[in-house]
Image (cartoon, rainbow, N blue to C red):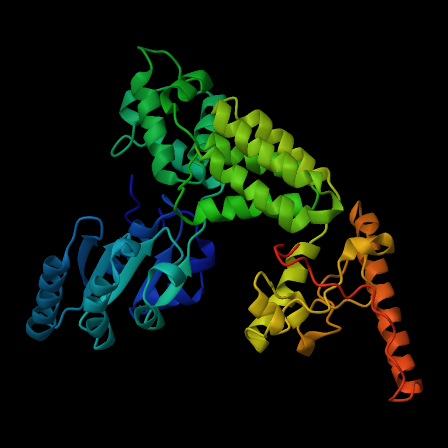
Length: 451
């Protein structure tokens, strides 16, 4: 049932519809090297074959799954000879080009550049990540889309009634609900839809009609989901963004999609733990405990029951107030670390376990916070001198964080006011005036580790 002409080809109107640039290039026989990027069963191989047929070029197909460098070099040598002796161009079609490593892609590069071959590569993975930059810059990337339900249904009905290449000779009866089930199960993949139709028709007994129940029995498969491909990252991205956006319904949908497709439940649990700290944070500190507990629970009970703690944690995280202060504050501190490098630790904050270190001033002037009202040493500083006054943490005014941050704000206020008063006192006091007693400038005991 592979389309033999553009009239039989369905879908991808954004690429090959009337007056589209690619269609004009095909009709004028000026197709450049290109990469066809799209999901399985969207028509990449068929489109490449139709392009070759329309251009009268020699079509040399190759699968990156099984081909090696030797076979690749031979095809290129044949293409060179064909051009020199017959004046015929060669379209080298490489299916699943993302499976070629860098060295194999390097072999193709010069021959694409000098026009020995016109490369058409097909891939289900993002070319930006899977195709080397120099080769990508010499090709045009065209994105194919999954086939919509109406076009899939048209393809299935065409195959059902086609007596030459389809199932028309069997005169099978397929109920409307069964057609709908085939379309839904195919997930936009024409190849899968046709395969499911064929299996269902062959499984029917005698004059038995193909029903939706029979289709489900024939399929017996999970949703399409490549745990190492784009769909993996796209789906988990949708889950995370739904949680961040506080949409429990969407979050549950994407969770169910991933688990039903066979995603590793512990991978999902780890993502929930990260989100609990990154996006809920101090707005609800319990969220991290809930996420970690869900991770342990999934590890303990496994699947299929593991969906329960994952669902509970997903709902909790979606409903919790949000704050990204942990991420934002860390990034502000990290920026200073990267800009200023390893600034020396102030002497009063250094560890002083030996007499020599104390003689060098390590720990001198350290103020033990618990000796003060509110457990805050009012004139103590903790940053390197070059960074005094920096404010990395900015509290979000949501949930528990607004209450938790009050302590930090009070400490900052007390330290700032005390330093301001001391600065004024030093300005007004004569140079010969005695220094005030420093009840708070006690170094730690000689045998103590830093507290």
